[in-house]
Figure 1 (spheres, rainbow, N blue to C red):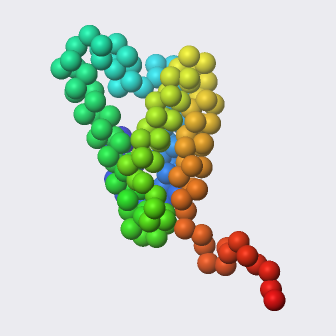
Figure 2 (figure 1 turned 60 degrees about the vertical axis):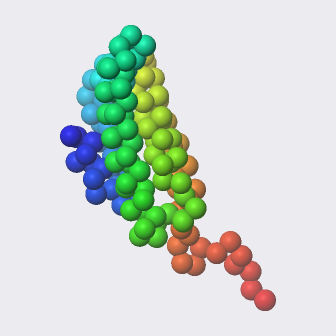
Length: 141
């Protein structure tokens, strides 16, 4: 539910940054301890219980779909280029988030999570539509 509230209206880089800030801040309240509850369940149950694995996979897919939908909105509004693969970028963001949770948990420090998410968002930014006047060729003549 928290992720849905943060991501259902995602349509800008500032929105991605707000989402990052919220998940990092929430994790910082525990100094990175406990990690992601869903990720922890996946680590414990995925190889032992097929029903549980499928349920957890559905939750991850829902989370990733929220990110993807936000990235699609960014494409539709001209924030991201048409060649940006929203599904692939959403997978990268989720991988950075989950890896960040794990590293923050073991270090009991949210810095690795912040770095991982910042790098993933920087990759998304590589698909940003250049602002007017940001032409690479600014020479005259």
